[in-house]
Length: 260
Image (cartoon, rainbow, N blue to C red; front, top):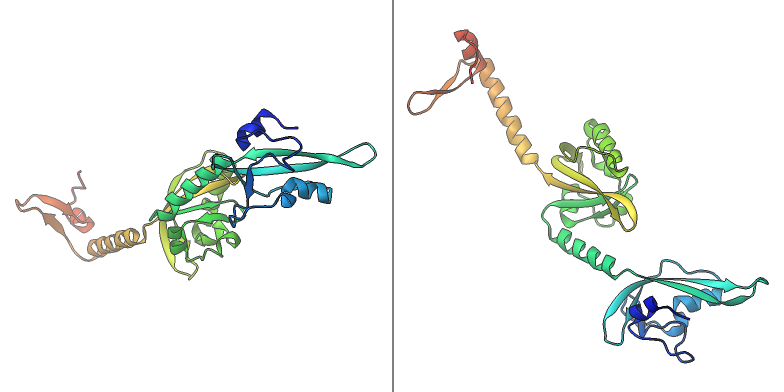
């Protein structure tokens, strides 16, 4: 027994008494590309073991050669006496979802900007730029927490905003803070984040730009200005003699105050 949606998914109508276990033309393992023999179909496994099979993705090939990513959910059926009578198989077409994931991966893998997906517990994904910035390896990612990256002095603020974001609450989406890389180096980042659904989980996506050089330059300018203000009476003019800048000691000496 099958419905119209099954026929549309398979691209064909099964032949009663001939097709076994499933109406698909052919089924392949998406991980190695090998054809799966009928006796290893998930519905056959469910009947053989007497229990449901969940989470096994397959590639269904139609007679025209097109492929669909499918998530089967076979469940054994029993009568009142507990005897196995058959199985019900619900097939979920996840092709659009898989294609969207592949496009997301293609874009993020090539991006020079650090992009990562995370929950409160751990990272779910980090692109090459994020790995370079953090110093993590690809193998590190599932075992690392977002909070481990954050500088202790900035952690409370960032964690609160991240928690609000994961809960769908309104939170500042753009701000700057320090991180500590895997090697112990302190770096400044400009960060933006938003809540998303990733692999059916509530998560957040973060985009980070390394602004350490800019911050260092700003600090150098600030220190230089402070040194000048403390040690000299200074004014800067343009080529026509128009004063463009005076330091604090110059203003104090003149006693006139600053005017914009």
